[in-house]
Length: 217
Ligand code: SF4
Image (cartoon, rainbow, N blue to C red; front, side, top):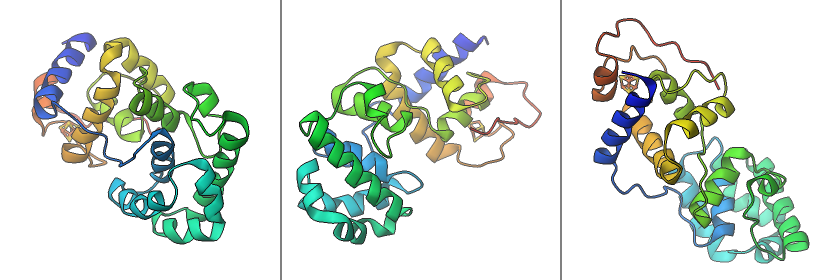
């Protein structure tokens, strides 16, 4: 199979497995989505959803978040990990949104990336899931799977993102982001794998015998 043929096959299989993937983080508007994604760094989605249930009851917009203050935010999110850093980022970002953007979330990835605690992946998720803009957020799991499936030889998530964007139609990027993450969580979370276990790897690499070595992100 060529790389393109593998991509087409994989997309069909993922469609069968996850026809309607829903974003795993709970949010009620673009601001709460931004905060939820920011909180998800090195934390499970389940844990984020537990803390945001309380946090978003008190603050669904930057102004109310600023009113809550550092101590209160920290208390609510402390089980998320990296809580002191995340608390500061939430406050700093909320202040910038109030002062410069009239409390609205910018729709431009590059502008979003200038906010505290917001990297390229977070910005890509927000513009796609909040505004429906085409973007392909690549995390370490998607990076690993793209290599195991022979869709990219990227040395980092940026290179993998470029390869995946060339392979898949633009209107499927956001959905594929979720589908690949769900597949990774369900079947391909193991760090070491010979690439011989699941249906997809068996189909696209029927002669594969040796261990797949992946570039770390
Ligand atoms: S065979 Fe291994 S590498 Fe391939 S999808 Fe399954 S777990 Fe991942």
